[in-house]
Amino acid sequence: MNRQFFLMVMVISLGWHSVAEEPKVKQKLSIASESSSGKTVSCDQDAEPVQYRKWTVSEPLLTAGAKGSFDNVAAKDPSIVFYNGNYHLFYTGKSSTETPDGLKYDLDTGYVSAPTLEGLKSAKRYNFRDIVGEIVIAPQVFYFEPQQLWYLMGHTKVSGKPNLAPIYMTNPNIEDVQGWSKPKFLKTGKSNDEFWIDFWVICDDTKAHLFYSDQKCAVLRMECPIETFPQGLANAREQVSLHVEGEDEYGRWQMFEAEHVYHVKNPDKYLIVLECGYYEKAKNWYGDARRRFMIGMVADKLEGPWTRIEKSENEYLAHASALFNADGTKSNYTQVSHPELIRSGYNQKLEIEDYNIQVIFQSFDGSNTPDGYNYNELPWELAVMKNF
Image (tube, rainbow, N blue to C red; front, side):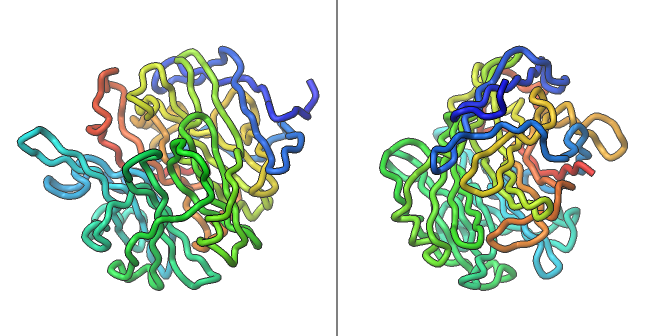
């Protein structure tokens, strides 16, 4: 089979018989990767030298907060930078409150800071709704050097279609948690009312790129000149970056959210990590939260084309069977969800040094979670895994 295909790359899919078993091949999965120019896409299986068959998992960094807190159900959707001697972690906190009509669930962005990752667990927690007066979900943090401002991207709920909208806040000093601006809607060139989620910004030397998912297998992208960010995205054209779906022994799965993109300084590649999930036993559009996993793709530029990073086409970049505790025992976590790489820098280029990767991710033990689970009650917590 030739290495060059037009828009569609057919590769062997991964099987997953149970929550934590090794994947087993069943049939093929479909990956479409399209460059912005629509040129032929290369599927080069001389993959990047990434070790992913064993990940060492830390103790939980952040778990649900105390009763009555804004995160008393779950801590999820992490974004983190290390700056001026401290880790600065932003995350989505989920809470439940008893009302006469039953439990009410809320989402808010939380913030903690500490000199060490382990110290985040005991750090003071801040609720962004108390600071900015608005609901902010699924944050992403970076320092935008051209403006000398910290940006916190996210989304919020709105009426109509789509029912989520991208927003952003700025702060000249990340160490001043009270210094964040009120959220502003990010104006884009989106020309339809199709669903979108998990907004992610990364810049190269000349352009700012906005990535997001449609929860229907596709990653989409917009771009603007870096000097016009963020206002320049109002004139941007939506483009499909890639499309991933497949089927294995457990059932049909697809890429559906958390499309996070980074620049790898050595060997000067862009790495996108993608959260995938099964749908036969899913709750609404969420994917089966008990068995989510991660695949990876690389490109020479943010416009693509993107190719699988795994050395073998019947492997995942991160899945439950590859998660181990520091003492070598098997981790109880049954999924890798909403992964955020711990960067070597903190600016808009979102850089890591090489393929020795540390990932902060959300997970829980879903081995005894029944098919009829309530998604709002899942006890997501944050931990770190590393492949070295």
